Length: 161
Image (cartoon, rainbow, N blue to C red):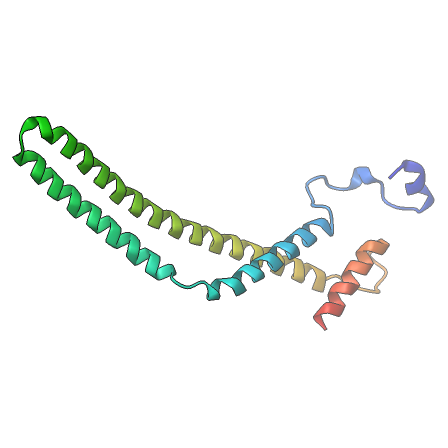
């Protein structure tokens, strides 16, 4: 806003506002949009089946790869040295598959934990915003609200009722 408009409407200058505070309304819209998206994800997750089955499958694949690795290592020790190189190469490939299966399982669990932490953070932010909106005194004349701020507060009150 320009200085002339601030003086005309008798508003506080924009220099006095703190630069670290988020722009009112924008952060709340982003938070509400993220929460709406998260609710959609939560409603979709119960319909997804087989999450535990994939863990079992990855464990089974890992176990098979480990036993194949051990069998191939034993075989490589018993055959002629000119053939053992190829057998050991395949054995190391089997061990690599076992490691990949276990890593995929761990990555899936870490992503689930990350999503849970993000959801908890969003819930906490939303609770703070709701508390801030609830604690805004209306009509005591001590606080100057612009039109957009007042409409946002009133619309938040109406949606709760």
